[in-house]
Amino acid sequence: MAQTITITDDLDGKPNAEKVSFSFDGTDYWLDLTPENKKKLEAALSPFIDPAVELKNTKKSNTGDSAKATRPKVSAKVIRAWGNQNGYVTERGPLPQELKDAYNTQFGTSV
Image (cartoon, rainbow, N blue to C red; front, top):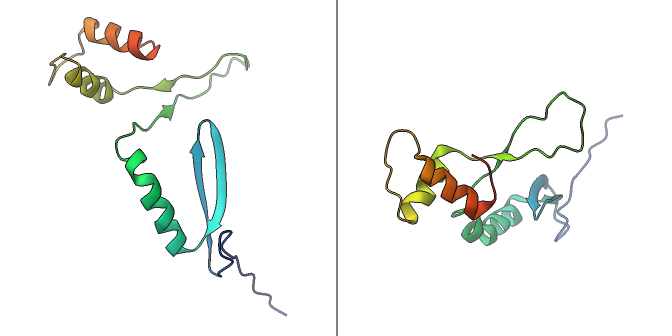
């Protein structure tokens, strides 16, 4: 005999929900939402996500040293955009070392 499993929305208990995952402040979350509640979540987060920079983690090394933290990669596009907003005009070409140094100082990175 066949069985049907109905996933319900974690907020309102309505059926036909789907898993939605997100991260905030280093913690990953997931919950089941109907399409309507997913749209509400997207609308609520949109003012914060739209101007944010998406971080892409580098691959972990195969050295087995779990104490080494992986740093997110920062694209030249992101650095260039930050530079243009802060008085460094570089529309094309390699990023000047002065810009990289300023970015590193501002964000504590090493690019």
